[in-house]
Image (cartoon, rainbow, N blue to C red; front, side):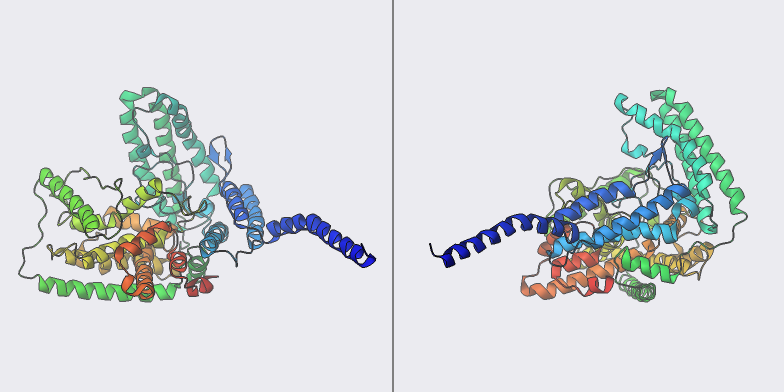
Amino acid sequence: MSKKTRLLAVIILFALLAVVVYAPQKAAQARTAGGPYEDLVQLFKEWREFQAPKFVNGVPDYSTAAMSEQRQGLRKFQQRLAAIDCASWPISQQVDWHLVRAEMNGLDFDHRVLRPWSRDPCFYVVITSSEPDVPAREGPEIPSVIEPWKMTFPVPEKDLPAFQAKLRAVPRILDAAKKNLTEDAKDLWFLGIRIKRQETMILENLAKRLKEMHPALVPDVEKAKAAVDDFRAWLETKHAQMKAPSGIGIENYNWYMKNVHLVPYTWQDQVHLLNREWERAVSSLKFEEHRNRNLPKLEPPKTDEEARARREEAVNTFMNFLRNEQIFTVPDYMHLPAVRGRLGSPGRPWDVFNQIEYRDYLPMRCHDIHWLEKQRLVQEPSPSPIRSRVPLYNIWDYRSEGLATAWEELMMNAGLFDRRPRDRELIYFLVALRCARGMSDLKLHSGEMSLDEAIKSAVDRTPFGWLRADGETVYTDLRIYTHQPGYGPSYIVGKIQIDKLIADKSKQMGDGFTLKKFWDEFFTMGVIPVSLIRWEMTGLDDEIKKLW
């Protein structure tokens, strides 16, 4: 072997050694500074554990010290996320990165603006009576809520200790809430008082239910009820001295839309969209009324038996329509129960959704796409480890409520009501109703309306006078919108986002577009912001550039 050859061999050997030694170091640096997708998944897992409050003696800790510590820790998580460079990843994985970013921004917004632990008594809900039709409860709340609707009665022996512990924690939770709630937000405190009245009734009913099955638990329920009553009295005393508005202001609203809910529309954009949709809905309603003027009016059922039969027929009609018209692939597990219930008292005016249901049950079955979606979330695999968890901070609202609202008019356009022409009037009524409620959300948070004025506006702009100013619906809705900004407009603006996505995708697919192809793909994306779904389904990144 010549000297030149030996020298070349030595150089090659050192080069190989350098690769062997340096490559792992380089890879480790990449995982730390830029990181593969698995690093994001691990960060997400740690993030979810971090953002949950610590419990002290069964009480979630929202003290000033705990929240200050959490806010400092949040900065470290945001820095770690920013160090992960996802630019070269597939769009589906970039979508997950943005979901994690939005959740961290949600906690940041809680600390800077909403501060539900110190300004919102509605946050300290201790018991609820029914399951929400959306992926999670609407608006912020403590993580230790008692949910009897999830439970089996009699309570299995193995579950009794945890149930009793939650009941016994209620007085301690509300004592802590009195220390934490230090900020003036007049309307939120008024709504908190209403919430506590409802909780008192729920606990009274729970005590009656447990009296025969678990009498040993009744004293714990009664102590919880006494604590709720005491807390309500404390709220009433404090509320009398309050003056500050509960809205967050337009600048904060815009930041929240852009950075947390990933909605590409500002407060002013949404005002414009809701006004336009309200005008379209009312105009269309009047033309439908004229078109149907010679048809019999929709009459309510006269008996409970007739009501149940109508409801069952509506459920069957809706589900058969989805299957037979090939709107999307309907798995065997999907179903809607024919809910049993009594008619409203003839001597008492019906609230808004009773007005619709008792004329025809079919239109609101379209909105029940919510329940089919919840079944899908349980039964079908998630598109990713990150999307397997319901997004925090109601990030899903424009997607979830937007779909359910869109589904009503989309199914009308697909032919669901062709044999029930007067139902078209109800569909346009629903659009107008949701525009009216959404506008109250926007104007309350801009500071242009108080809670009373927002309620009056929603009532006045709803056709036929069906939204009652003294009804529970308007107060429930405005409570959600007051402590969860954006939820009101989400029905209509989310619907508009989905309309836009359908238009974009149909343009791309051309003659190959079908509803079944579109919706089957749409439903695989998960219940995440429509802007992210649009990016993943179409590759169009104009919205995500605007939002980031």
